[in-house]
Image (tube, rainbow, N blue to C red; front, side):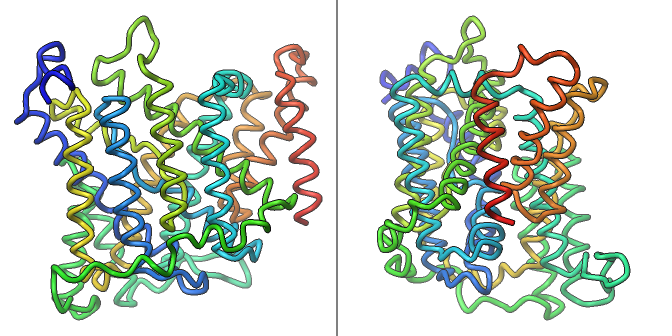
Length: 433
């Protein structure tokens, strides 16, 4: 094992890698409870227990593939933002059945595999300007934070102003506010796994005051995966529509660049970059795309690389053994399903809001002093929460980009692929509305 993961060359050992794997798991364990709360939200028709198991298994399998094939200390799990797009845009807004939405995730994973194996990935990545990639990440952050505020009635509908501040004296809302303060303080103090521990503390306080139900057990039987397993193939023929094409492209696009950014960021922190290039990048991307295909088959939204893996790297993780430990812990997690009853919206909302803050940090790298860049970037970011749609935010931003660049006299800098997306998204907005 030491030889396979090159411990000597990387200057690491079993103890360091194990601690790093545990650290990464704790930093991203919140997804085990947040993902079911989003995908199995009232109205989707999905089974929360099945989604919980699918989340844990998809994370375990994807992370294990990353460990054994790419040998990187990077963990995977169903992605935040993409799960919100799955539920609030595809299922609720478009009225697409969750089974068909899973089929869309499956197809996007297959396309990702093809792009990775053929080398087309680099061409697509290079075609889309960096500021728009950053804007997409930040916009998703604002969107999921808005969902978090909404889920606990911190932000409520208002006839006069469209939205307004909710009733802060309502018990679950007050608990969520407490959870936000606790989580923010823990992360500000630099505690690894601050989001996870914030959820734990919020849940305990909620149980003490009777806002959150007390679980009947901590360890229990593994919920049945039957309600979601293979459901992606029941309505597979329905993915061949214009609307689903846009959905698939959005799944693909967000995963595409989220993965690339995460891989580079984590590898750089671990000192694994060589000549500003990521060794075994193809294998790492294959692991990510394969995990998406597996996750969709099991019954969860897009599985992607997690930037929280940087916490494990910070604890000394340098090899794939770190990921192998994390994968094992996700497998063990499937026995803790009784805790799902504890994880109410008041407990998950702080996690959504704080993760949104983290994702919005990419705003700092957008060149706001260049108006031709600032306009499409701003519209990408702001239209996601305002239109309550990640896809719409991407569409509006990508439509304005060629327009502002041409007006500025920088038409030669617009890649042909961006012109193609310009046409696609105009058709998309016209079709949807």
